[in-house]
Length: 239
Ligand SMILES: [Mg+2]
Image 1 (cartoon, protein in one colour):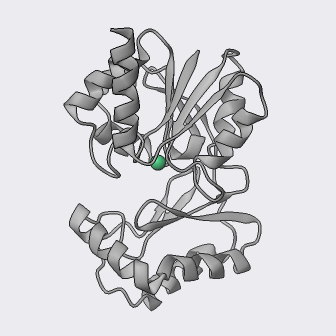
Image 2 (cartoon, rainbow, N blue to C red):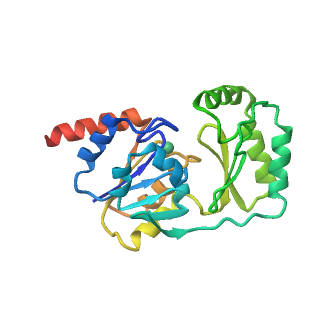
Image 3 (cartoon, protein in one colour):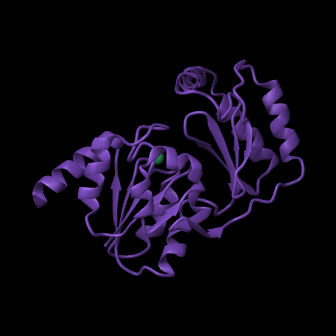
């Protein structure tokens, strides 16, 4: 049996690092089972959130929605996003037109496998993120921008990601692609933990692929605290 975990909000608080207690619990829980981490963030961000030994001992890491696969510090697979004509200028004008005044930098990130857009900017601190989330809850800025992008680029997948960004990628560049890559080598049953296993959530495409097979287990969690609870009960049973 293999474990696959989403990272943000499933193993850690969104954008925060794994607590020491959670790291110890994680290791006790996975035991000798191979495990995979699958995140919407890039590897650089993953490294700030997950302790190095947990990353090193993983069977594989799938950052950027599975657009990359890393094994033992080496990139084994990478998907490339092709910029359609007019996308960049549309993002630039959206940025200029946004009523939200705070600009922190890294607004249009080309992550090779996908593009990440944020009016407040990916360089925002946790406080700046929270302030944007509050603004967003009323202004619905990302929903409006995403609608316009979908109309202009019907061939792209446009999703609202994390707290402050819009993820732009080619159709099929979602966590669902993780399974096909894994299945080239690993044929056993998989248990998947994710916090966004609902239609439109970024863990959903992988859950859908896993459910097409028999023998896999899907674990929907509310947040990382619930994962912590589940891991605590499971390791208590073993002990
Ligand atoms: Mg998540």
